[in-house]
Length: 421
Image (tube, rainbow, N blue to C red; front, top):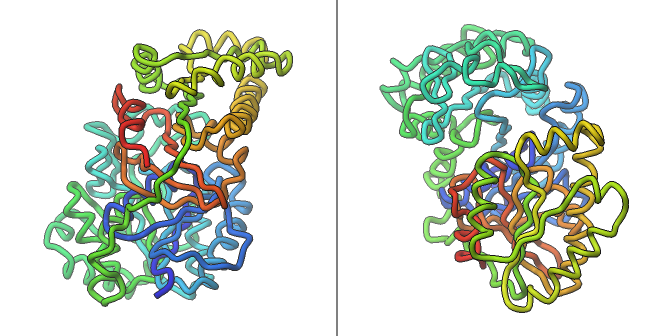
């Protein structure tokens, strides 16, 4: 039947989050890293193209997004979704507004929504204001973000400063009335010359109703939460089979490894928990910067232990340790030596029979995926919210669990090992 929903995500872990949501809602989903270069269509209901366009110059983000859209159009997608962060990470110059403008123009459409809400993850919208937990976005810590400081919680204003056309609001009083009232509000705003609608949402049920109201909209934009209502639209039209086991993955043989580059508090706790049960090896960025000796040591240590079970190789450190390394190497160099080390280690691990990778940290995940020449992933069952097991579409597939630093419980690594394909 072909691809039904074509998605463009502005970062890697966000794409994984979205793909996991679609699978949970019953759509077989494949995620590609960047715009596919092959013209061969993949047998799937939804395809998510993961870009790295959130913080690059706006015109570059537009160009990448349009390239992704063209591929999805050639694949025959029936609807398109532009996914960004649930905290609406952007600046007054973009990139959400300029990318949305460009996608609408390319599709010949004159109206869409913007709804980053995800109440399950404590992101809610009320009167157009985005809340993180119980506080406004601009009081949540996001006002201090080094690249996309969010100093205004009113998304009507925020998007209005980025976009070329008028931004309206579908308020809570309308949303709580359900799908028909929401759709009527969309029509009214479009007739009044608005091109965008920020849509309030306080409960996940609101996201379902909003998604249903978007059934005939060529382009939908938002966080991953809004996608939960979209699969039903295809079922109603007889395009999506209800009995499909969307999260089924092939069985992967081979050894398992945990690689952790994230230094988030959550990952620090996960590493500590893993160390209580499994052998672990800590990478030192200062030694890595001097040459490959420590990589050789890590592999010599890991190879015999992997014959008996999983091990942990990590660079996860406390903030004061990270700062000390950055002061000596520089922020960019410190990050690069760690990413390069994990990439080389991942390549060598394959040579000793590792086929299952559990990876913590967005940059680390990206480095490992590139090192393994993975360009597309089939999405499987979720280990934790936003973190599914996946299998690559390589000739000899890998099983991969790729998590953002702050995701998962204290025992995430054990939960991943217990549920691996």
